Image (cartoon, rainbow, N blue to C red; front, side):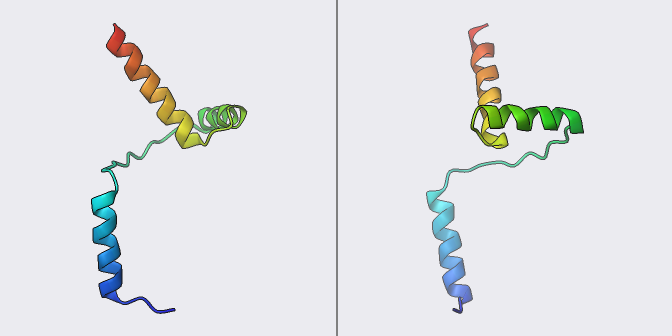
Length: 66
């Protein structure tokens, strides 16, 4: 299967319109802390990303209450 540049450009433009804007933030974690987070994510049946996003959202909600 071949894909032309025109097709790829169209897909990229379309995806930019339909997708919400997201930012990526690289995060360095100590190895032991990373392991604890992975274990917690597994116990909660979540991905590590989901666990961390949920924790950040909960933190912001609590801060708004104060």
